[in-house]
Image (cartoon, rainbow, N blue to C red):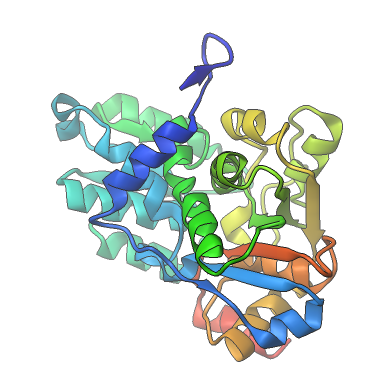
Length: 331
């Protein structure tokens, strides 16, 4: 681990590899898929990393399990507290259950009902807050202080990022096994935990690969921050169908990794994200949520240059309410 100042440390490739070993008995090595239809539409060789098929339906289980598994035994009786719109919530709840810890999750009141219900079903206690007027991290930190729990940040944590980086290791290995040299990578991006973890892994395994973040319009804090060279906030906290990737601003740890590795950020509309959900359903036979489909949307709608290239993208989550799926299919 590398320290960039007295408060922030960056994970390294060795920690990503260690996370892979911790996850091996519990996580799923998700497939890297090909689609002739997608290749024909884009003029590229497109590799789809189906993290919607991961345990709990998103990549978040990886980072959550890695981080929780590193909590000292003496601290485990206090449990864990996290804040999430649903995917990190389920990842933390599932990891806590496997490791015998209690979990409390601070979730926005407008989170999809499916995500809330599944978080509860995994044994976690859910505390709701107003996304527009309340600060979820302050609430979570307060609960952690009151109960002696360990706070698990959804993305601004080196060991969460190391866990997410295992996605990148798998992509590199799977592409190589298919005889392909990865040239472009597009990752669904909220706070940057997945994007920075994948970028860290690929900088070691596919150093010539061009890297792009993908975000919904109005919540393109990473795209703007990468252009500016420093962290910028979003103007609003809600209002997009892509709830899984709505964060106030990039995490410091992830941004420090990505500012020197990401080419630029791609931005897609809610309509394009929903069309990508429908495409995944009809053509890939996969269930994906809007936030988990923004990288696919970026490729489908020419938000990144992919023609003639070998490009990989993440489908980062599949926890979509039936009503939202119906809306996407009808869009």
